Length: 122
Image 1 (cartoon, rainbow, N blue to C red):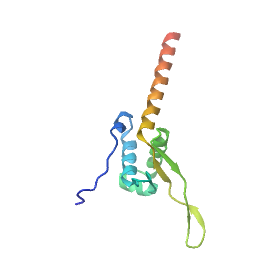
Image 2: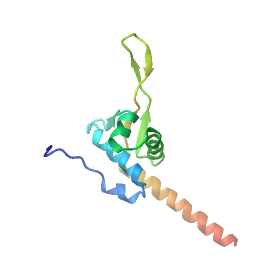
Image 3: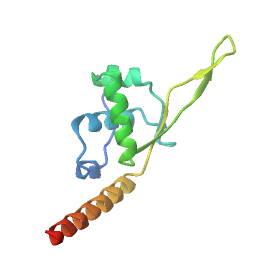
Image 4: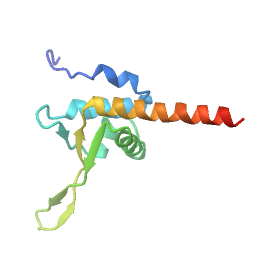
């Protein structure tokens, strides 16, 4: 047993209304994260294997986490032994949770304003 090994999720993550799959992928990225750089680079296949989701589903949730401003992704390149340059894994950067909370609050305010305008037009 791996006593003493754990990772924490920020409490605010539960205020964002994430789907269970988004939460699972986010938690896995936090699990892989380098605590100093806030980055990790697991392959989509690796995330898929450890979350029991298809690669397409993982990719969809990664895009949604980007839209929620929880993560940033960057493509990487690797050089093979033969000297060829190939696409590598995505580099994930975990963003400060407060940015995602602020983004959600802004979207909620816009949605409320739209609802009020729609009601006034009726």
